[in-house]
Length: 308
Ligand SMILES: [Zn+2]
Image (cartoon, rainbow, N blue to C red; front, side, top):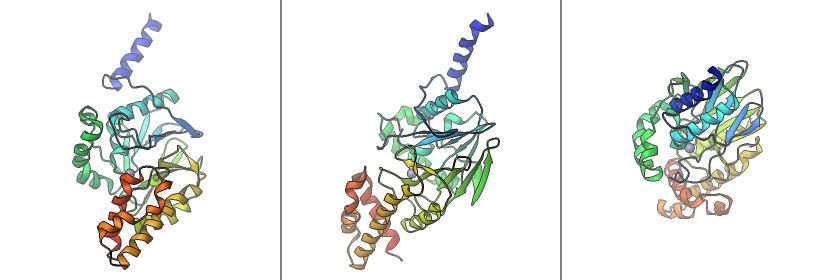
């Protein structure tokens, strides 16, 4: 009798955990022992991809699991949770957000109620406070009302000022908060046991980098990042992992090109509108979504660099 009821009980728990929806597990790759990554599509948020456009993952320690970014919708995050449950039944003790962008934080609500601690850069609560409502509004048009309707903007309570360590049970994760680069709230996570660095959007691969912080500081941050003794990196967008630090080179080349072109345009007295059309164009064939983001990056870089 007891045996017969067990599958039913498990099903009920799954349904409860998913607030009535059992989600199919996301496909994850074990990029190093105990380190799992799901590769999001290199695309804009859309109804078709449900906001599943960022790389998200988890690390399994001796006692518990840490989730690193939750994806662009609660549905995607439920899929991540289902993937975790296929690997381990250890509790999720930490949810780490690498920065404020919707494709990395919109899934947070799937992990609320699990007693997990949310962790992020010291600037992340302020950034979510300032941008959260706008992100919800803007994404209704992209992924639809029903997916956005489930999203709750959940700010971290474990705030990282410079560095912090969380322990998953004999498995420390080193969290590091960076100066304004991709955004003003970028955080990286290093799993020392395997030398795996979760770079968040401080590293874009395939997907053209997006400047929402400071192009100047970002180039400086790349120098400091490259000295981190890791073996592999999980970029915020692109493949599930890549060799470290070589993986940084294309992004560095793009940001240096863009900054040099913008500085030249400013020196020649060109207008922002003209510079936005021409700067960085030599990189166009090297990146996906270049048309969607390059002019915006050039505009941001112009506003920043015209005052140096
Ligand atoms: Zn981002």
